[in-house]
Length: 183
Image 1 (tube, rainbow, N blue to C red):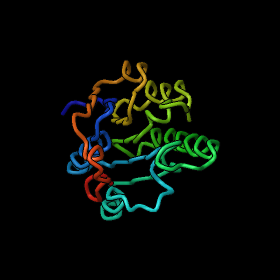
Image 2: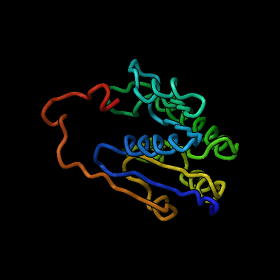
Image 3: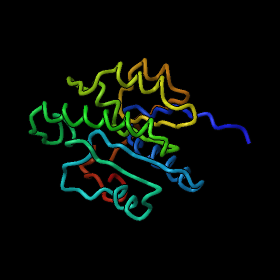
Image 4: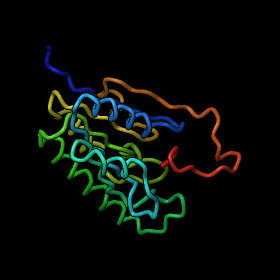
C-alpha cells in the first residue's frame, strides 16, 4: 500500500456544517482505527453539553476532544476581557504545535481556528504561526481547519477547500440551536 499523503482540508463559509463536516471525517478515520484529536479554539467555558465531548468519552483514547476556548468572542453575550480570549487561543495554538509533532495522531481537527485568525474585528493568533504549522506538519498527518472566512494564504496551502453557503437557517425563524444537531 502506498504511503499516506497527509492533506490540509479547510471547511469554511457562512453556512452551517463546518464542524459537522470535520466530525464526519473524524468518524470515517476512527472507523479505520486512526487516532483523532479535535482542538476547539472557541468552544469551552460554557454551560452546554456538547455531543462531540460525550462521544469522545466513549471512544477515548482513539478520539480526543480538547475544548480550549473561552466561548465565542464579542458575540452570543460574551463579556469576558478580550485578553482572556487571546491568552486561551495562544495556549491552544502552542498545544496544537506540540500535538502536531507528537506523532500520536493520524488526523487533527483545528475547530474554529479560522475565527482565531481574524473574524469580525478581532484577531487572536498570528497568521504566520498557523501557516508555519501547515507548511511544516508531518507529511502523513491530515489536518482539518474550520471556521468562517478562511484566510487566502490558508486556502492557498490547503489541498481541499469546501465552502458552506447558507441558503436557509432555522434561527431566521426564531428556532434556537438544537441539542444533538447543533451541539
